[in-house]
Length: 298
Image (cartoon, rainbow, N blue to C red; front, side):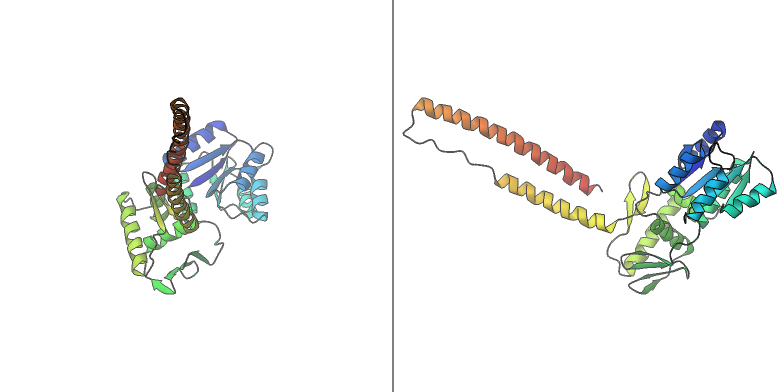
């Protein structure tokens, strides 16, 4: 999960950033408000940690501007001002939660997890992947209009994947976002839930696996359009490779009327030409082979 930290105190920013990275979050850090606003608009974040007192553009103004433009990512405000008026202003501007400095780091991480689990407002009534539909309002999952009976964790896992297409989710991140704060299962629990979810989707008639295992990293939602495109490219690569092999020119026969010297000269020229063609063909074959290998690993 990706977090934007906008904090002008470099020491605090460094400490917070290290803490979040240790909990397996990806963190972008900036020390001024204007840059923070640009980053928030330019990139997809799952959460913003926003200091109130910032040089240039203050945190409350940033929050108000983002919300006025329909920005729905959760915002957690950070402030050294233990003042109810400032807290009210921040919440009225659209902040989801407030933490007062100096804060307890464990409490901050707990609040981050809570906001990431809850998310901001529901942006759509349902999430889909081909004929699979997840009804956010009724918390129901159907495939080809057939209802799937998922456990709460299987449902949460599927929702997390559908909400974050093409984002690699580590097992630790999945544990943080799907499991309740009071539970401390091992990473093998994620593998078990993935297997259970896959089994139920297959039993419902789904022939394609929507969950891609990224070995050594985690899981992500498979992009079906990209997968089909890669299959087409792989087939085209193999066919082109076959065609190039078939185009190899045969060795020409020297006419009997030519002298031995002329024939030898011609043979040497042809051999040189063949060598060059072979090198070019080999280079192309290697490039095609490397492309094919790369595609099989996606």
